[in-house]
Image 1 (cartoon, helix red, strand yellow):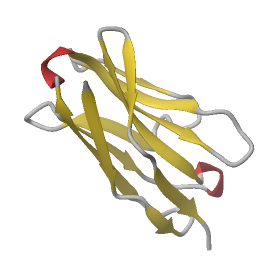
Image 2 (image 1 turned 90 degrees about the vertical axis):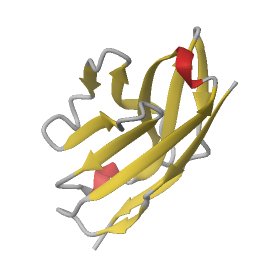
Image 3 (image 1 turned 60 degrees about the horizontal axis):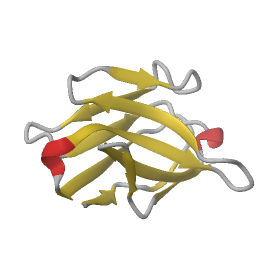
Length: 115
């Protein structure tokens, strides 16, 4: 089992920045990748960014150049630095961990981009 706890969401003006954090606990030694998904009202959940245990990264086209995913030194924490935020980035952001083919999810953190 893997438990994920997110923090860092909130309200920000367009063009602003936020950093999301996700701390994993439990069987973290077998996590192969961690990432962030988001779900806007009335839309499907989508992958935003992912980082593998080998530090390979993937970004959705909509966030390339604006968002950066990284892992902490202890490897059980993942961050999502979000810059140049747009109103269309408004969503609930979910932390995800892949462990032996099983997806684990955090409870979600609301990010609202509005003036």
